Image: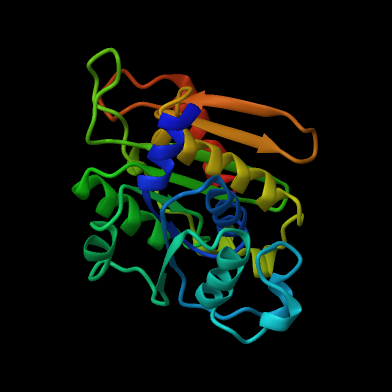
Length: 247
């Protein structure tokens, strides 16, 4: 990465939506990497049931706002990071305004409606989005840049190309209800942090148009291609959609 890459990290402004299981490792590693400005959005407070997987919070922060607990963690690990606290629920009314102040968004909520809102706001603002999701033993992540084109001159896919149908809430309960293996958010969240660093510093190939699916049962990872609707969709895009519905 060198000095040039490190300077890019210092100049970057990253918004993290969700300070829970996925957001926790993203916050930790981006702060440690030297991201200049970190904004964190989360309306919730820390509860005892969070601590098994949300590693930036502790027993002494129970009852505190997650954004404040995250701020204290960031200050301990890297006091040179500028931290912006957004203790609010991101919705269609405020998402565009908040996201517009950042260069990159990392989203790790367990609310499908929030994922839709964030993806639409990022597309409108032409800001890259790293997004992840969890099941009890499986996780997925991808990078969305639908405002740009790939090497073949095709429009990159949208969130709706990966998830064309919203899941029934009964089939995709949050972690508090369905349960999640405590190490899984750390694995997927760290991968999400890596995608953010790749986008900022310019190394490697971000997961644009690719869904990474990881199984904690087997330790196996698979990468599935998906495309913009109308861009010669393949069987792999159908498989990606099925994987998402299994989350």
